[in-house]
Image (cartoon, rainbow, N blue to C red; front, top):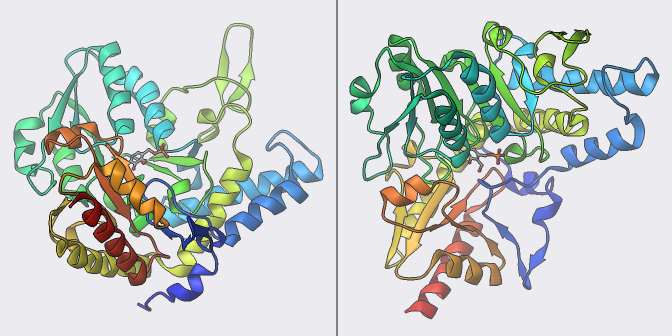
Length: 409
Ligand SMILES: Cc1ncc(COP(=O)(O)O)c(C=O)c1O
């Protein structure tokens, strides 16, 4: 595997080359959203400048071009995630909408009082709240896999948590708040033993690892384009074709029907059955360009670069007195997210001081309030790395944190 030429690759990302508060920007908020390479920006501009038209419904040339590009993007994403069929790729607005789609179709159709959904305490709110709403509507019960002190799932509890009442196990592939990489194949195998379906929140998963949805063996995989070099407002729900075919539609409208009568309608084939209304055409095409970009760089090379960088950053941060990193201690068990606290400094103050040094990190509960509660915290600061980050930037983070320490004593 060839190492990344990060210097060359950084030239592809215009937003990285700017000063913030008089300092060269260090962008370490990638778990929230990534920067976009020129290949994605160019495809968005050329789509709107040359091909803009609505898809599927027009016979004219521009509509034909837009439709071809839009469906080609679906094929690219299907290849990128190892799907058996492009029809298994449903376009959504992002991870949140993908999970809500499953809750509102499969969930409302199948769940009844007494059924159980197994979640984990590590989940992002978008993989919690839709299930809470569904449980309130159906009488289903939510159960939780707890976390150990390193922020790893306590999988030894699975035999007590899973039973023939479990209809769904919904867990994250990689935690956005702790960086923990979950052993999802093990979870899938345990769920299958009791006949439960598995939904993986892949918002942080597909970004950092080479994904093969068929190999993982889950039933649903949800992710967002904007965290993987693509545009905002586009994401994917992947599910096995027969499952999608058995699920009722969610939103009704144009493009999702076959025939419409006064009182009833019949549905379009999957995936269109789940794509009512004018979709985010440019977004889908942009995500197609993003996966082309990531595939050309090489997901294995990206993962190796990130591991190297996070190992280095963890070693350096560990030398700062009073700094505590949450999540697995072994870099092999974590992705490129470093959640930390520094003495008594409030994470918002840490982030503000770093911002004055041109360093972008996030502070807050990271939409994972159950994680914060588990560790007795209100918030953490979070530095998250991606393919274009460097050791020099990790050094800038350490220098910035020394400034924080000098202010807070
Ligand atoms: C693990 C995880 N799940 C879900 C989401 C929600 O993604 P989106 O806001 O793109 O729908 C995020 C975003 O931060 C995330 O990190």
